[in-house]
Amino acid sequence: MTKFFRACLLALGGVFVLWLGLQLLSQIWGWLLLIAAIGAIVWVTVWFVRWRRDRRW
Image 1 (cartoon, rainbow, N blue to C red):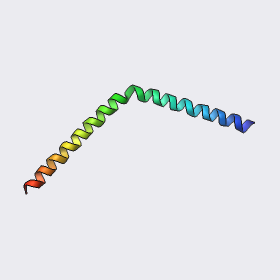
Image 2 (image 1 turned 180 degrees about the vertical axis):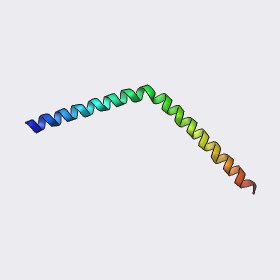
Image 3 (image 1 turned 45 degrees about the horizontal axis):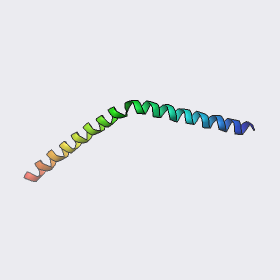
Image 4 (image 1 turned 90 degrees about the horizontal axis):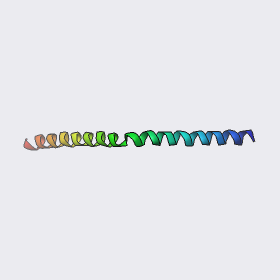
């Protein structure tokens, strides 16, 4: 019975930590998407400039 009780407490703790993580993520997901979009734009720009420079020669 003690092992079952500990397993239940661990499961409850895991659910709470996941809930807390999702709550924190829901507050900053817009900023994370903005940072990812800016990073993608910078990467595509660098790739395009290198591609154009290599194409000229």
